[in-house]
Image 1 (tube, rainbow, N blue to C red):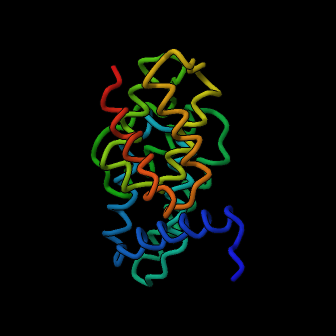
Image 2: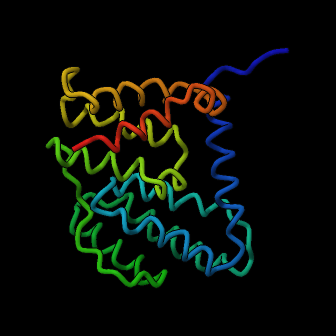
Length: 194
């Protein structure tokens, strides 16, 4: 039996996550709810990551929801193509209004250059709600990517251990992640961060 390359297995795990997640959407109201789940993360997570996630709704094939899906998709594509933060912020505000999100969106830029902001970010990513919003691989990738903004040193435990576990999880398929217990270990360590 030929086992597909690891990257194909991981890709299938990610595709299955989104298939299951989008399978819960059965109406225009569900589309609005899906988008509204991600909007509170603006200013906490990269708006490009949130844009990419919201664009998953393009896969939805529900006739009633198509006009809304088209409108949301068009706005998110504008966000992706816009370079200035102030213009992107206005587009996010417009999107929020389109889906009936009632909280004010006044910030989309994030700062991951201080230890305290890194800790807040990790705690959000590894919270129960976020763990249901993205595949484990995406969350691991986001944590690994922190090194591009902040130098996590080996003597900064458990922050370094979380980053190290994320680098391992990023290359594992879902079955390996579950078997290894590394994701649970990473979540446990995040609760010790201060």
